[in-house]
Image (cartoon, rainbow, N blue to C red; front, side):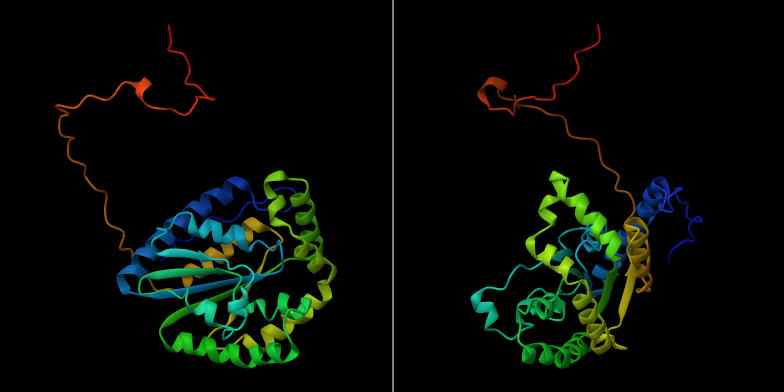
Length: 278
């Protein structure tokens, strides 16, 4: 379904050219819209899991995928810390309730793999709980796949040097400061422990029915394009987007008078319209 794209262009620093990136992203997002129409028509149920280290670029990729899709059929699940009640449930239970119905796409911004990553490294679960997760997770995912769910898993891989640069950027940018937390800073101090946990996770859960796809993400723009393009190739979809709608002429407005402006409260115009030309 995907048309061949132009050869990539790069900056002098080796990063993907911004204009090339925007053009390719627009083409891929148009394909995502076609994919969503097909998923809805076919009644497919799609789960996409995004995992990786802090500042690896998961959120930015999810944002670019979701921004062009109909939110009624495409949702993002980013769960917070489990409540006391959830901590007593079957581990996978709070994720199951977010699984898709027919015609829906669910994107997990972190998922049940928290237990194999942050919970393991930070000591938020016991050894027994961790070992049970490694045994149960492949079976859980096999049940999802056997039920007809299309499960696609991405691991975003970022180097220590690039993660450090992104952390520094977040600290000095007011609009991004919320993205860095004490937990993120602690994960920075435990790089090796996270690496070992990731290696073990992939060893146990990279299965034939639900494989992991690794996305190198030091160049965020390239990572986004590569991930979206790969996601599209996982489906043999057809273009079911309806054609342009022809709008009939508006009926004449008769018998209606708008109320005076001074009878309603308007937002102050901090950015007023330009004065009319003389």
